[in-house]
Amino acid sequence: MTAPLKHSSAITVDVALGDRAYDIVIGRGVLQSLGQRVAALRPGVRTAIVTDRTVAKHWLEPTERSLAEASIPTSRVIVEEGEISKTYAGLEKVSEALIAAKIERNDLVIALGGGVVGDLAGFAAAILRRGVDFVQVPTSLLAQVDSSVGGKTGINSPQGKNLLGAFHQPVLVIADTSVLDTLSPRQFRAGYAEVAKYGVLGDQAFFTWLEANHADIFSGGAAREHAIATSCRAKAAIVSRDERENGERALLNLGHTFGHALEAATGFSDRLFHGEGVAIGMVLAAEFSARLGMISAADAARVEHHLASVGLPTHLQDIAGFAQEGLADADALMALMAQDKKVKRGRLTFILLQAIGRAVVANDVEPALVRDFLQQKLTG
Ligand code: GLY
Image (cartoon, rainbow, N blue to C red):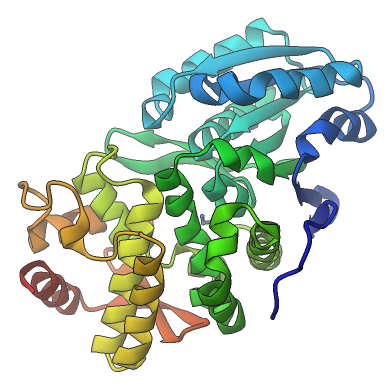
């Protein structure tokens, strides 16, 4: 696989879900076409844009301009940045604002932001008047390659991440790759973990291509669109075969069982971004797979080496304040994993590797083996 030499015009990826199928439109500058595309999709529609303060500073004006140029009435709901908005209180604020803005059954909610805004606005749309359509305009790399696609929406419970939510597919995703230019390097890197995930879980050739082309992805070259489109195609294919995560879709959780526990142990704070937790979780999943004899130690090291080479944390010890209570404790991490959505009848589910590019769902992993492995990683 080789990188395209020039920025291509917009790439469209189809999420094939029958009468709920939708397009993901990827490219530099595609935000300008939002109004035109919404008008074609829903003539006469009214919209409400849900966004956060930081994204609003950069991207609310061009978003509103695009809609205004297509004569689409808009209102705006601005929430605080971060997980603090993915709460009952955040949901109440957005829902009440949408009702006050008179968003009706045939209107559209537009989620302009990263994963938090997409999940929150999507969930509000799912329950508003028993379901209003929504458009995702993801502004982080993580949201462009993962959370904006596939219809998982929701908020956190004080007892765990994403424990309340609904499957509610967007009607359109507009992934403008130029909006990623305003992300901090750390945020971009965290999103990159989810890009690498698609290679590790199902596409060895893509992983090899990423090893060779990651610098161009980070610098905003044409490889960026190629990587995002490849990731979206991989996700769209899985979602169209298993929308409700009855089987194959669980592969997308590679690195997430460990990762969510680490995020919980660090209080869902800036100490560890979601993608950073996924990076460490993916390395742990690869090393645990090697420990079980499913892959070679060299393959596990290859996963670790690639993620480390782009500057992602790959070891538990890389987390800020690692020595603090709760983190350097295998039993505490096991307890956090037991609260994850991926637990079924008390059994831990892990996504493990049979090769780079071939992940499998392991439903019945012996907790003692995981605990011993974690204990060794914590002391090693
Ligand atoms: N982020 C995993 C999924 O959408 O299934």
